[in-house]
Image (cartoon, rainbow, N blue to C red):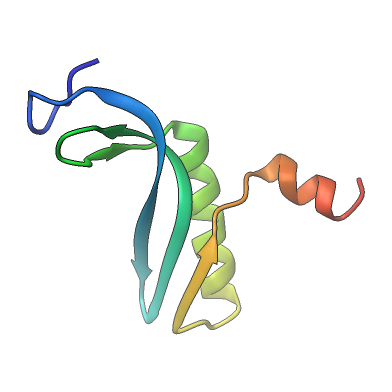
Length: 84
């Protein structure tokens, strides 16, 4: 699929880093799965990935975090990590 931003690159499976902010919380999430343009590096997240990133931001806000850098984990990985 062609990139919707630069119109010349091809979208490929990859990872990116995103920064989310709410109120006084800034959350940087690394290794987020996405479709990434091979030319301009524009990234598109799936709805499931976006929802998980939003949950991670909600958690950081609840904990009163000001700035945090984390590695992306999907919900299935979290469940496996706690042994359910």
